[in-house]
Image (tube, rainbow, N blue to C red):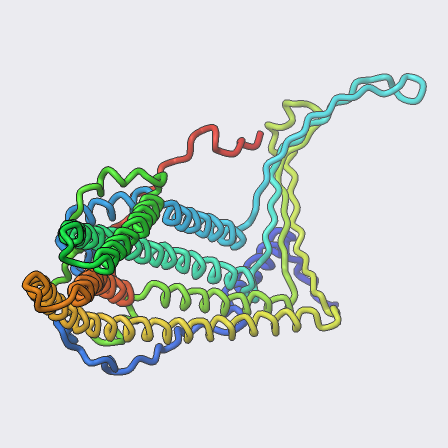
Length: 494
């Protein structure tokens, strides 16, 4: 006689099934595992480091707040206002909060979803077809569903969401770096326009004196009308420069106000008093290319986007495999309200299930191929970002050095032009030279002085571009965003 077969209780079978699915959920997720790419960087910069630029390792504090090295309190105050009020920076902050919230949504897929429900029903049957009695029904309980992440599709989704959050944080830092540089560039441009206006006004006054002198001599019959007309058109030409310079100054101030999150025209009073263009520090440490690449937030953003896309390949790959789900319910039911307090009225149920899309005409594999192509694109974007970063630093190094040499040459030209203008005036008044030499000297002096004022601004602008290319400027951290007004919040669900 065969011994009786042992029959395990159904509760134990359900527990074993659950334990098995949980164990399988710990398996390695499908799809490629991400490995950060190696950024190829040359050991040294190609541009020759000179004119105060050294390959020494820059201090983090200096790079973080590089604008303070320019020694301009007004610029420092404007940077602080821009960080607090710039709208693009606030948009980047909102994108970080959005990415953080979406990561939370994705992470919730790793856990069971539980709903609570309750029902109370009263009804009376017809006396003709029934008993004519009033029936009651009560039930309370919990329903739970869980998609067991055996093949890692959800885990890959969480990886992608986390990488996307980190990309958003890098984008916020990149926006901050760009904002600080743009504020400094527009401030430098405004001060350059003020310097050019001062040069034009000084030359205009000198030429007015010259025109008055020629006019009096013409009335005395000592010079012909040609000299008078030449002095007049020279004066008018200089006067014509001023409106365009004022328009350029207004445009730079308006742009600066918008960068600060203010309406155009708000900074005209603050910037009414001309100040010199900020002077670069005597020495600048730029480090080596590899250090610059590690600091650049745009490279970090591109690398995190690549990580997110690599995880999305795994998400698509998981669709090739079956999905396992657990559904369950537990509660109490009865025909009287008091039945809900009786343990004997407990109800429960467990429903394991699976689904597997075994035929879809290659749609899943096509989606995998599409995600792999997007991953390849992200890799190429990362490589292009690295090359662009190196290009920006090299160009900034060369531009900064060459513009300093150009400025020095213009200083010598201005000095020579001043001497030539004075000599031409003396020779003309002594009758040893014609008026053409005076006109040429005045025009040359105005041109060289204007070019020198421009070059002063360009040298500082090149330095700003160099600091930006090195990834500096993150020290001005934006304030924590304020909570939106109550009226702006979405209505809560009932």
